[in-house]
Length: 69
Image (tube, rainbow, N blue to C red; front, side, top):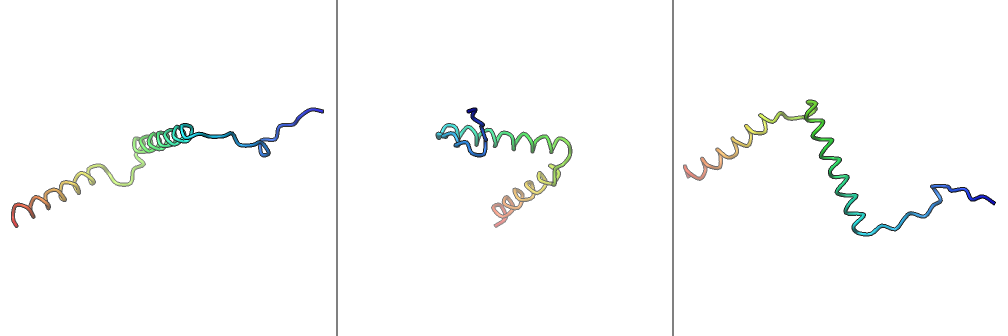
């Protein structure tokens, strides 16, 4: 009698902590890579110059509070 291998009925392989960590790291790398590629294609939501301007205004506001208070 020949055995038929059904992937849905197969037992899942045991995973150890190193496998889980490696898979997490790989998924994280893939997410970062995909985000970078989307940004290079121009699919970002807020332009970098807007973020830089907002950061500059926040820093200037803090400096103003410290120096003029």
